[in-house]
Length: 91
Image (cartoon, rainbow, N blue to C red; front, side, top):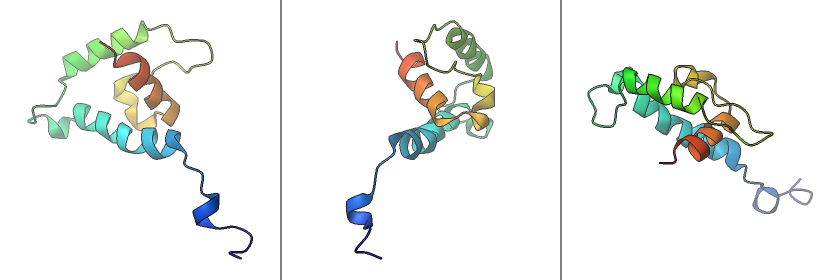
């Protein structure tokens, strides 16, 4: 089988799912999950609502998915995580 395909030569890195849907989504979750409310990095609910409002005002380029509410992070796709980090995390 190795003569036809090899993980060393045929592996294609998919940043959308291996980076945005994994560690980056977890990074956002650590900031908004109430089980971390005593940690200094936790973003309080009122601030999360403000972030939701501000992200709803962002006009994304054509072809990009709208950024959903932070309360629905569990259902976000990798593309939505990427859009949040690229367009909403600018200051």
